[in-house]
Image 1 (tube, helix red, strand yellow):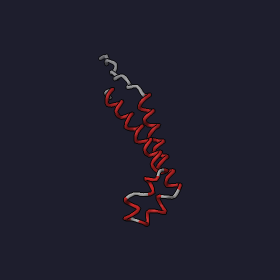
Image 2: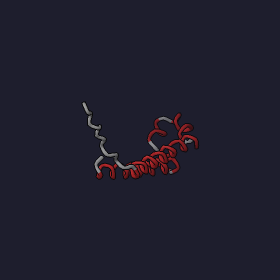
Image 3: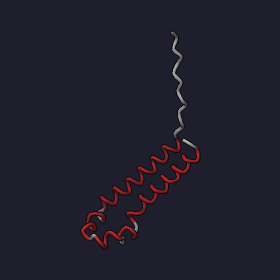
Image 4: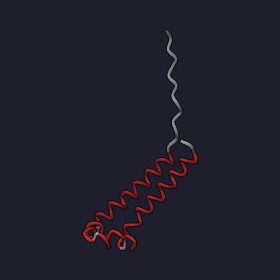
Length: 84
């Protein structure tokens, strides 16, 4: 993978993970479009377990970003020459 593409992917994963980690516990989560138009979603999405699941996805996303940051591309393997 290209270095610039890898760096952009890591930054995107960290930002998305931080957003998913913080957003469910903010006031923005409680005042959104879906709660006004679909009030039956309110008890489901305001439940702490649902908020925890979304935050867990954020933590997982950050760990995936760390995995991309620490991984090194493997060198291409060349098969050994065959002797007839």
